[in-house]
Length: 198
Length: 355
Image (tube, rainbow over all chains, first blue to last red; front, side, top):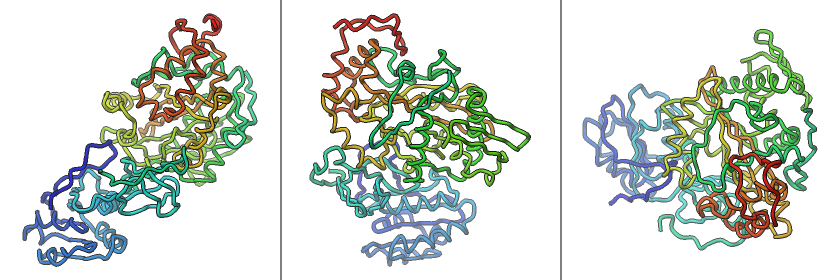
């Protein structure tokens, strides 16, 4: 499928690239949903022989295709939350020179990048490629609650119920964009929600 | 002079007030009759006697009440003070810088007695007399950064310097102009400034970063920044914006002089010796429009600045909706006469209002 071109934005907003195979003794690829296609685009038998794939299908049917690439290790997780302890364990055991590849939704890439950063890998050394949904992982700045897969602006915080404006300001540490109350100065005056990139 | 500390609040009944002394020394941020972003840095090596520039860390009549307000904010939300694990040494650097500076600059208020690593710190206004071991966190009731910034007016960002950039890796932030330390912690200089309009395109942040990366020990720098706040509310945080934002709608032509405050940040920058970090104190001063208008020069100039400010800046600073009402009020204090250069009020030489 064609890749979404994100409009130009402010400097805290992440910029994604296109995965490329890089030299290394070990390769960790973490993807969700359509991110599988980014992995398939660079897969070669030699690369896969040294690759550990952690994949969350999210209703897609790419898992068998990834499995048929014969990666050295393969894990299909039901959710990101279910996969994160395995990701941490793999990073804990990783050796110098591990290559990390992330592909799929922003929420998946952001959270997995944060795990890699906490394991000591600089964020600039981690490859990312956006595929699939453009929905955002949002943090409500008021109650600190995270709402996954936000597609409209404004949206209602799934925790405290405030009407939140979707900002482009992004925290790598939280792997989330910031949501700020949109009607604080005029309670109840909330514009009709529309798609974030409409 | 001996400071008479006010007993006042920055919330609820807003009993905050400035004495004549505080008005006269208010850091009015406009050196001319217009405003646009600039890298307006200068050396922080004192200033006119009695001005906010004179001491390294200015202490004024609001000290005790501001520290009480900070304690309330931190009790409500401990995430306003955070320090990433690698920043503890920089916290000690900051504690030393403030204790040494305050005990030298205000010997009647603060005392520091050092015997090797055993330090005794006396803070008379806050009634503190603690003995601790320098560089041993277990001997203080809080981490070193939190301990000293609970006793020092202004927000504190403690920045790590690496990879040719500055990183917001620690801070105590309870009097902020609508930004969140909890969200921004860990960001680099360009990232935490990302939401600021116009300044990126003007190359302001590239130039400012180059300047800041080269700040040397013993050669601090400073600049002023400003915004507008309705009511003397120190904690204009995004976290609580859904509670305070509505206060902006309470302005009327009758109450604007008392309720509308010019909010000025004295930002200073000090190199820290052990960590090679940079500390960035952001000290907030508030002054009501009606108090500012007692200085004829400031009355003339504030009207011209607010009137001519680009829409983007008035929007970013959060007063675009109230600007017409501000101008109705401020225009009464602008008789069209020229103003003297510089920020100081020049009360004795500027002409009185001619209308």
